[in-house]
Length: 349
Image (cartoon, rainbow, N blue to C red; front, side):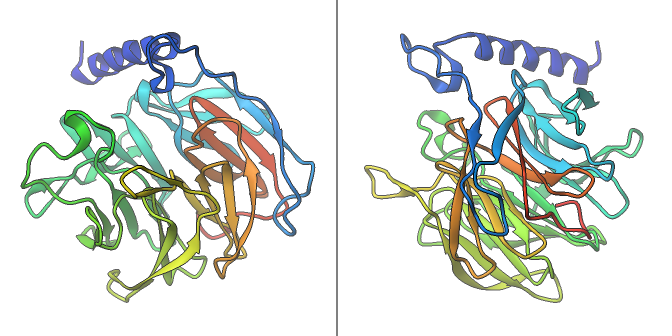
């Protein structure tokens, strides 16, 4: 059996154990019942974004983890199933198929100008950012920086010219246990990186510990004009913004928008649980966070929240022929919402 196939089989078995064990699902303590099944919800009225009363539909359940969706030119949406080491696909009618059969625990996806699918991957011995589709074009774009391995690349965004920005938050520093911090004290810090269209890797933001710029970088996005970089901080109170310089580096860090809801942890850290981040054609930002999808204007004003019935919606994307369908994924479930707003016409996400 090939190593990649063996790895996929092992991970799939472990995922099945998690998905079928009430004591393990979603990290539930021993003796606690499985969380209630997801339900369809109703969006509030957010002018220009979504009409009040629009249903948040469940498209698919029972997926092997769900992360990093991106819309394809044919109107379908593809998304990571990290526990199954594959990429799934949903067409406009909700039909499911496997798009990439074997990937290394992918977490984030993007389409480059050549139509290639780029992913962050996080399997032991194969951690980095690389091309995973079409078949035959697979290539690792970045797996080390300054001679050291990347920690755990999470999300990415690709510009209309093929530049890639991605976050590397490592493992959750507040998860507890041996995985709470990088095992090597000389390991790379949590950070945001830039891969130029020519393939050069640059670290543009360092943020592993407060009071550094970002304590745990997660979702990442570009403004429609690609002059501003937005980054979610899972352990912060704000979406952060940076000005993009001609060489791809960033400057002028600032608080762009305050999350609508955060939990204050006993140690005083603000946990926003902010994850995926996207932008629409008017420059509004949408982030997966506490309560669902929080929506902000292009000036950082909070506009409202689209409720999602899983404890932690993870990521989202515009898709469909007109890019007016919002897909939201998390906890092995895919949802969709018919929007008034529209995704970007000049890039996938």
